[in-house]
Image (cartoon, chains in turn brown, cyan):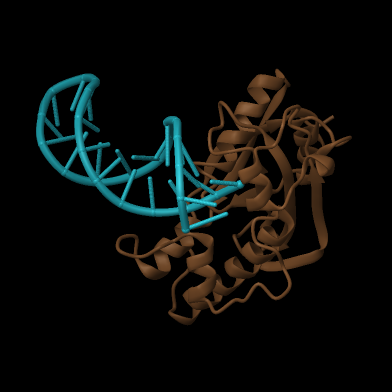
Length: 197
DNA sequence: GCTAGGCAGGAACCCCTCCTCCCCT
């Protein structure tokens, strides 16, 4: 299967903080892409109950309140549901190599769940390829700005808004690379998700 | 975009350790 037909799941996590070891997931959102097109109708979103108080800074940053996660599944359980939704697709996240997948793996470890291998890409690689690694910002806001992609009603730092924007950014970056006559180079990493039930 | 933590990757160097950069919430 060539990269063009490949099916991807673009995903994003909101958490109680930056440390995979000391913080927990509070929201998971994802959208499917096929042939470099975002399939808006095939999306996934859930709040996650971290089993503790969400720091005020995180509530102001993400808009996620304690009441939003009350009654939501625990982190390992939510990841299990997500894993089933992902199926055999390859995951993609922005800075996923150093952030999102670390949280996924730490959550699997803490939840002592059975795991399965999964492949993933980090969309930072596309930004590096397009604009050069050094001396250029590659955060999602910087990428969206360079691509002239506005938020258009989507809320940044809500995982649902972020995956919709990241999907569009990936589409636009691919378009920009093709315009230059380049194929996107996306290194494939190996990670894990909870085993599918 | 305030705050904190630490990987990954490179440099220097021959195997590690140190260092710096940058991104995520």
